[in-house]
Length: 406
Image (cartoon, rainbow, N blue to C red; front, side, top):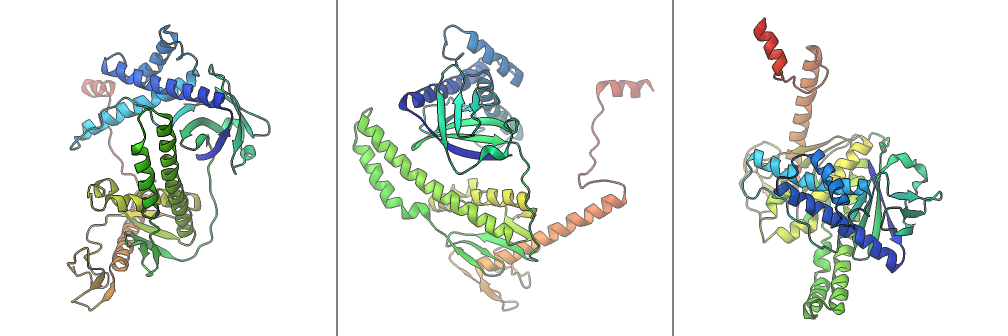
C-alpha cells in the first residue's frame, strides 16, 4: 500500500461543503461512541448497522448526505478506538487505558471515502465528490501521477483539512519493490541529541533542530494569538498563521528524515537500530522537546518502510547496556550522560560514546540474526517450514466430545 497526496483547489463554497462532510463524519463517530456507552452497539457489525439507523433518523437529515461507505469508514474509526481500549484493559497496562473520547473541532480533520462517493476524471487531474453534499469538481495539485494505477487499485480517498488548505490522499493497493545492488556494508545507528545518529564507522549526522531554529518565530506568533479577542476574525487569522508555521516545521522535518532514511538503506545490506520507547522517554520534561524535535520514531518508521522496499533487513535491538559495555572487551564502564567519551580501564579502548554503543548494537544484531538462521536450519531439518513455532491449539467442543466418546 502506498499513499499519494494532492492539494484540492476549489472555491469557498466547495470548501464549505467539505467542512460539512467533515463535521458529519465526526458526528457519526461520536454517535457510535455514545451508542457503545449506552450498550446499543456491541460489535463491529453492530456499528455498521447503526450507521443505517443514523441515516434513516429524521432528526439528523445531514447524516444521510454523507456517502454510506464514508459512514462505515468513520464507524471503523470509532470501533478501532473501542478495540484499543479493550486490548489495554486485557493487557492490564498501568495508568490510563485510553477510554474512547468524543472528537471535538480541530483545524486538522478529515473525512474518508472508500470506493464510492468520488470520481476521478480521465486525465487524473480532477476529483469530483458525488455524495449528498455535492462539493463538485476539485483540481488536483501535486507531483504524483495517478496514470500508472488503475481505478480499482485506489481503495480509499481521504480528504484532510489543514491550516493551508484541503488535501486528498489516495490509498493505492500496490506492492512496491526496488532492486538494490549489494554494498557489503553492515551498518548500525545509535541516535542521540547532540548528533542525530552515529554509526559503527564513526560517521555522525548533525541534528537539524527544526523546531529550535523556528522557536523564536513561533513564540512571537503565539503572543499575537493570545492578544486577540476570542471568537473574533483576527483570532482566526492569527491561529491560521501559527498553524502554518508549525506545519512548515513538521514538513521540513519529515522530508529530511525521509531522505536520510532512504540514503541509509540504499548504502547498507544490514541495518541495526535501537528499539527505543520514545513514548516513555518524552516523560522527562527536560528532554521532551528535544526528543520530539529529533523525530526518532518517524525516522525508524521510514527505515522500516524503505527496508521492505529495497529488501534490506532492519533489526531492532534492545538498547540496554549498549552505552555501558565496552565494544572491544565487553567489560562494563559506568558513565553518566555528560560523559561523551568511552574509556575502558580493562583494554584501554577509547572511542566516542555513541560509536561504542553503535558497535555493541551491531554485535547484538549479528548475534540475533545468526540465532534466527540457526533456528531456521534446525526447523527445516526437523521438517518444519518456517520460523514460527508450532503452537497446539485447543480443540473445539465437538472434537472434545469425540475424544470423550472414544
